Length: 380
Image 1 (cartoon, one colour):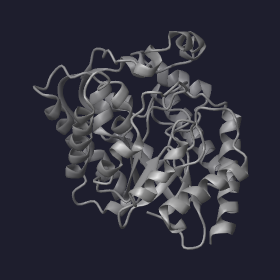
Image 2 (cartoon, one colour):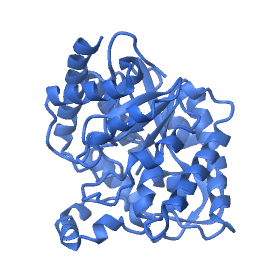
Image 3 (cartoon, helix red, strand yellow):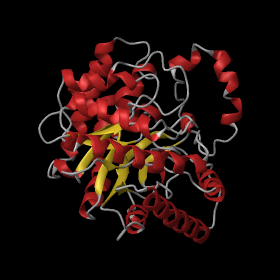
Image 4 (cartoon, helix red, strand yellow):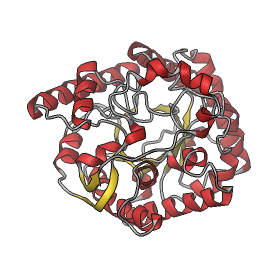
């Protein structure tokens, strides 16, 4: 994993705005419509080239393809893996259910969704990694990308299991390990291409107020241990410095009043065999939790990609706000060389689902770069 002895590097959490036409294509394909493969390929290639150039212009050090080739951050597996079909019934986040008046305000947002993450396919057969052609094509799009380091996201087995119902395996544990085993193909291929692997695992925080909303905290903590154990098994043989783990509480505007505190889960996240954690710390619910890293220091060999940009708000963070956030986080961690400036989550986690206007996404990433430069001048 790229680090620096002289400045704070910048990155983000993965997805970037998709052009409307591409989002429409992903939505049609997700809904089972036949699309022209050539049209999709051209749209993905053009969108990827555009987001790579935009990241470079914004000063991003560790960039990616913006997930332009995928319909969402986890349901894309339906197109690459066997065993999925029918429709799941995903439980809505409990904090939203407690505030139906807020759900009414969100109705216009629902209308923009092209790929519905709440009704993903279910596991109806053996889950295996089938055709790797889409994976290979996606990685090829960033071969030679002009970043000091390029990363590629891949879903966690945990979020697949949590959001894509099990109608085949005898137990949830068996389902987790089957998905993890299938994902090994993707994880290893990404690393073999010289890319930094980011495993997207919102389930390690989000599921406390979804799948485990009515169950004791200990059950949820056991879930974290199960998923991280499965991830560690399939990462065997991969140098931890080539992997980072993204954890969040759900990339949606909402009350988030039932989010599990970071202090309840951090020690278990440290058990992941990865070189970095990507953690939300910009949003109003979790901005204070940087202090937990002073109480529970980062393990040796692990860096923190600190979310200092909110991905659900159209407020553009002032560069001094970004710098102040980074300085507080560095004070808690104790070493600026262990910090990379990042975003709380992706900006378009599912085609058409982004909360932030595309032009403002780039303003936010410019603010990230400027704030990191200010913090660098004060910390190094």
